Length: 257
Image 1 (cartoon, helix red, strand yellow):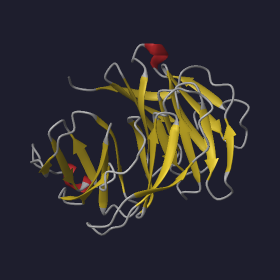
Image 2: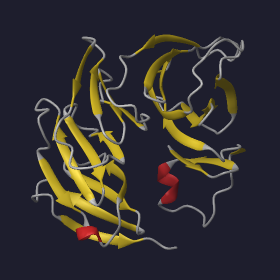
Image 3: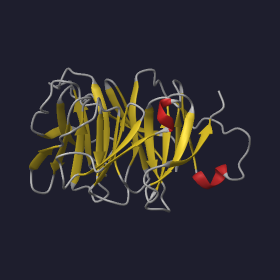
């Protein structure tokens, strides 16, 4: 499924429809997303969760509003910091970062069920807000990243590891979809790769366009290849990177303004 979010609407369509689709796709539903933070699909692609700085909302696969998950419907105590990032562990568990804290949120598929915080992970080592969360493909490892620190939480063993040797402020942080130990970072105009079993420093670093394409703002893995990545840059370029070719990018595609 493909979800396209603008400040006023959510548009959802099958990705296959884009191959021979119409020139325009009508919005699926209105949604006030002026303070949009993050969005993520449920593991079964049946629900889309959308976070703004002060709310989390669930939609179904057609874009229909299902329920508001945050703030707590009973108006009880909850953290005052803005939401920084959102992840979905399973269909009953959300993970929210708020300031330097990371909370596990339990909810139900029922539209009338309540939402509650069931666990707060150990405090992030730096006071910077946690702006990126990423789960390994088996949901056993969670990355919590601020600009200056990255912590790997082992959810199965309740242990934490802080990665060392970051070459600069972290803008993008995501697990590789085909490997639970490979972490992909965007730092300035560089793609930085960590093997999280070796936390002392990055295993490889590649300059994307030598800085001429701008800073790295997003990284996506190919669902069909274990080595191919798409790296989007702030200058309007997308670089295709093959990890088997010494991290040299193989092409850069300028995007239309």
